[in-house]
Length: 614
Image 1 (cartoon, rainbow, N blue to C red):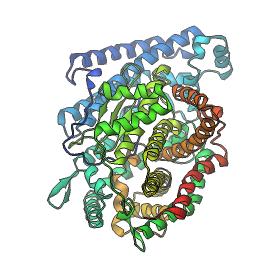
Image 2: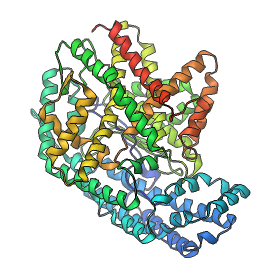
Image 3: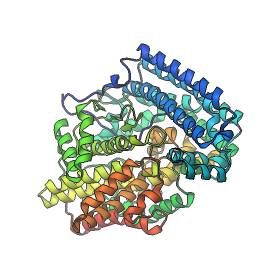
Image 4: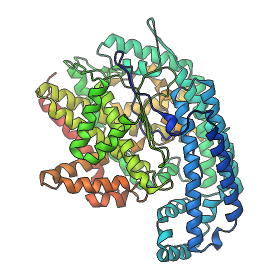
C-alpha cells in the first residue's frame, strides 16, 4: 500500500497529426485546482502532512493490538489520506503531461512528487504491520465485523506481498530514494522523448507525427520517415541505453532483495495473476505466430505486390484503401452510438467526458506522447489524453480510452483503496469498447471490398495488441536476464530486440539493421516493465468475452450479459480474474481460454485468405 506517483497510463495506442484546423477539446484541470500556484494546493499538502503525522502517532507499532472496530477506523482514515494524496499527485502529473517542456510544470510535478513521497514514508509502516497480523485472528475479525469485511480485498491484496516484504527501514529507504532513482530516470526519458524533433524534408515533426508517417499510403514517404525516425533515435542511443541499463539493474537489485523468482514475477504479483497463467498466455501466442502474424504478413506482401514487406510497410494501407476522415464530432458520434447500442448506462458515462471537458485531444508540441486514461481519484474523475487527427485508428483510440474511462468511473464506487483494477483486467473495457465500435463501423459498410479492408485493419490492430505485445514482453525477459550478466551496449540491446521481432514477424518482413534501435521509443519498457502482456491478456479475454456476448444476444439473453458486464466493471479491484470471469463461464487458467481468444484472430485471417481481393 505504498504510494505510487508514476503516470497511470493504460494504453499503448500511438497517436498521429491533427485534422485540418478543427478545434479539438483540451481538458479542464480546474476540477482539481484553479492553477498549480493555487493556495489550495499548499493547504492540501499541509493537511496531508498533518494527517500523516497524526496517523503515525496514533497507530505505529499498534496495528497488531487493534480490535476490529479500531482496525476499520484506521483503514477508513488511511483511505481518506490516499484519496487526498492521489488528488495532488494526479493533478501534478496531468498538468505536466499537457506540456512536458514547460519549466514551471516540470518543477511543480517534481516538487510535488518529492513532497508526497516524503510524506508517504510516514505511513509506510501500515502495510508492514498489516502483514504482521495473525491470519486466523484476522479471518475471525473479518467474519464477525461487517464493516471491516468491506476492506477484505484491501487486506488480501496487501498480504499477498508478505513473502516479499523487507524490514521497514529498507522499505523506507527504497521508497524515499525512488524520486532520485527510478522516477528521475523515467522523467529524463519522458522529457527527452517529448522534446525530440524529426526533420523530414522541410518539416520538423514530433514523435507522434513521424510515427504516423509510417502508415502513409505512399511507400517512399514511409521509407523516408523510417530512416529519419531511426537516425534520430540512434542519435539518442547512448542516453536510451544508459536509462534502460540503469532501470533494469535497479529492478534486479530490488527483485533480489525481495526474493522474486524471475524479473516478470513482481509484475505478475502486482497483477494478482499466477506466473503459470502468464506463461500459458505467452506460450500460446508464441505457438500461434506462424498461424497469425507470419501468415498475415505474407498475405499482405502479396496484396501489395511485394516479395517481402520492409519493416516500414508493416502498417501500410492496403491497395484500394481510402482513409475515411472523421471530424471530432463524427468520431464522437460513432463511438457513443456503439456504446449506446450495447449499454445506455455506459454511453451516458462516456458522454460526460465530452460534456464536462475530461478529454484532451489536441495535437501540440510538448504534450505527452501516446494516449491514456488516468483514473485520478474517485472524488474527481478520470481524464483522457490522446492526439486526434481524424483517422479510423483515432476513432478506435477514442473508443479504447473511453472504455478505460467508463470503467474507472464505474469502479470509483469502491473507494480510493479498491477502485483500481488489476492490469490483467484493466484492458478489458477498453478493448471491448474498440470491438463494439469496430462492429458498428463494419455494420454500416455496404461494400464487400470495404468490409474486407476493415477486417484486415482489425487483424492488424489485433496483431499489434497480441503478437507485438507478447514479442515486446519476450524482449523484456531477454533484456532483464542479460542485464544480470553486466551492462549492455545499445547494440547488444538491439540484438535482443531484433531476435524477438524476427520470431514474431516471420520471414515475410525484412528487418533492416537500422530497425535495431526501435526498442528505444517504447515507453512501457521504461515506465512499467512487463506491463505489455496485459494488452494481449485483455485482447484474448475480450475476444472470448465478445463471443459469449454474441452467443447470449443470439439467444435473446443479451441484457443478462450486459448486467453481468456492468457488475464486472463496477467491482474494480475487489475481485481477481477468476472471480470476475466466472459468471461468464471463462477461466484464464485453462489453455482453452487462450486458444478461444486467438482463434478469433485466426478466423479473420482465414476469411481474408479465402475471399479478400485487393
